[in-house]
Length: 86
Image (cartoon, rainbow, N blue to C red):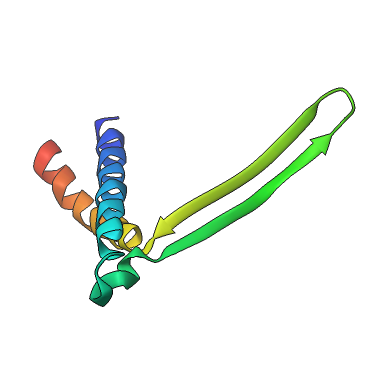
């Protein structure tokens, strides 16, 4: 349980730091590619069944820096888990 929580914390920190790096990188011309945003998802659609109406959609916006930081977090996680939990 503790290791799962650690994995979640490492990935969350990776996304937050990657997002901050991406926002900063968009303002610097030599590293602006780190701030490039990739959008993945399904556009919203509505299902009307006369009795009720359901609208479904899914969209993720990820920048290149977030992807890199997630990979760094996944590489560092085993060493961090071993140091904390033995």
